[in-house]
Image (cartoon, rainbow over all chains, first blue to last red; front, side):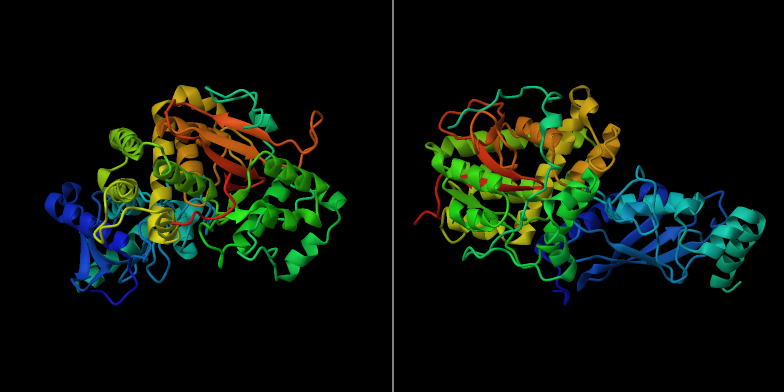
Length: 172
Length: 336
């Protein structure tokens, strides 16, 4: 069993989500996700395809999902490794998105109507939200301020940097 | 049973303004005393300062400030208190108010005089309404004159709620574990567990103090409340007020931020919705420290009654501003 203090509810839920993701697959094959190792269901890796018609197109982005022992009462954390250059991703790669925060938990003062974490969310729903966030950054809850400024003031340069970093990542 | 005001079959617009949830002047606290009946102790300097304010200063706070202050006390009182405590005599509650508001003391005496001898406290973590209700609901099944009938009726109702949740847009995968946990507890009233034992009051208390079990039940009740409100928007939309701003929320926003989210207090709308969808009769006694012209210390009882279930008593909760506990005619745990 895993060495972390995961409880039975969390483990059962994570296994159900994993089973569902592997049997049905993600919509349009937009991502894959699963535990890093069979011994620890509380650490997942996701591979996210860069959405079409965005500077991220053509890239595949690995992210680490870390689940708390009281999942799904509390949300998991998601970190792109290596980090992505994006207004809503911290320089260390951690994703800042409202759906990964419970209502009332407002690190960057999201608008109150935005989607929030609750136990009825899931890995799939969160990753789909992250994919649409890649396509449409939310400048009101910026995590990378320099990137926010660049996105706002010089969109072409922002897109160039993103594309370049994808090529570098692939050793091109 | 003391005189009760009319029961409400519709969301009570005429009642909401009377809800005393923001009135906390003179209120010593709503944290729990420990099992020995000692008053709760607060250690931080800020607490000491706030408690030493004379009532007039408390009165000058806005409703939002008093609400937040109350919330802070509740959340700071959380860590070492049980999720649900064993039954304690009303006298333990009275001791806490003796140095404070005499109105509260009179109301506690009034409750005692009318046979409400005990209180079962829940942790002030924002889930107290749902947790109190869940515990008292299962206990009422446990104490029903016909247990088999009570279990069957409860599970029939709960089974039908799964499709309601799916219609509300919740994935079965996302709620089935919470559902199973809740239903299994109820089944154990008449079906022995692996150790061959039926659920007893003390086992129920033990289960409800395990966060995994307790919170699973709370989550299911929250989803159920939300699904019911979503399924019947016409009845609820005019009453979906944001407790912080007092403004109307849209349905989706209200359900997500005020119902489904853990730690968010329940107000009348949630109580009405849950009592209807769970088909459970809920009576709430308001220990609010408000002077009553007709009778000194009288406590108002609000009834949220929807079902006529023979052999089942309504679940009786005790409301103090910002908090729910369970009210009981017994003053200690039954011997088994």
